[in-house]
Structure formats: structure tokens, C-alpha cells
Image (cartoon, rainbow, N blue to C red):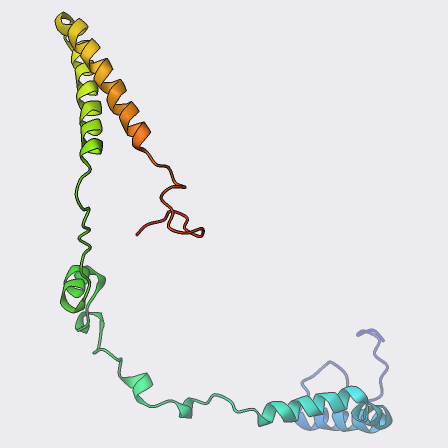
Amino acid sequence: MTGNKNSNADASSSNTGPNDGSDMDRQWEDFLASHEGDLNDVARSRSARKFDKAARKAEKKARFDVNDLKDDAFATPPHGRGPRDFQGRSWLDTDDVMDDDSTFTPPNPDLGPVNRAAALFVGMTVVGVLCLVVSVLIPSVSALSGSVGGVLTLLGAGGLFMRHRGHSETRRDEFDDGARV
């Protein structure tokens, strides 16, 4: 019914005044009594059994408790009292840290004897390129230095190209991909 034309005989169930706790308890008991058969059917259902089984299983699981932790976990920080009390090493000390405890030895590769022919061809190429630069910058000697620079550059680069053995000739076995450390 509507609020203005409430014809309920029970005045306690109307919305006109505050309800005390005993009235709510009585209404709940009335509800349980009137729906007892339906509630029993729900309690005996398969879903209810599954829920009970899952609830019992969850209770058996070990839970994490605050009492499992030591008091030091809450009261004392591991390295003093604050950020300025830190006694360890920071990333700003990386060079000192690396030098103190490191067993690292920098590599000192032995290149072996320099091949004289390779050194001669590299030298010819460098001198040839320098002569070509001089011939461009100084026009009075461009004929002589340009000719000498061109010949030296061609001979040096050609010699280096002819000496190059290629990747397939430097392999040690069929699985060698040429990577060297």
C-alpha cells in the first residue's frame, strides 16, 4: 500500500517511527519460520555442500599471521634508523667497489708480428690519399702530387684487396662462423 493510505493493523511495522532491536529479531524469526522448508532445501542442495567443503578446506589452510613475524620486522630497520645512516656502498662508489674486490684483469691482446706486406700496402694507401689531398689544396703541385697520389692509392688498395683471404679461408672448422673474442 502507499504511505498515505496505510491500512495495516500492526502499527509497529509501519515506517512512522524507529524500530527497536526486539522487533527486528521477531520479524526475522517470523521469516525463518515461514520459509523453513525452502531454507532446508537450499541447505541440502549440491551448491551448499560444495560451499561448505570449500569453506572447510580454506579454514585448514595455513594463513599468514602477524604473530609469525619477529618484532624486529616492525621496530628496527635493517641498516640503522634512516636514509642518512646507511653504511653500505652506493652506486656512486662504483669505481671503488670495482677496484677493491674485483679479480678482473683487463685484456692485453698479443697481436703478434706485423705482416710487412700488409704494412707496406696500408702505408702506400695512406700516403696516396694524403698526396691527393695536397694536390687539391695546392694547385701549383697538383700535377705531380695528383699523379703520385693516384698511383700509390691504387697500388695500396689493390694490394690490400688481393691479400684479403676472405671469410671462408679463415675458418678453423665447418661450424666456425668467424666470431673471435
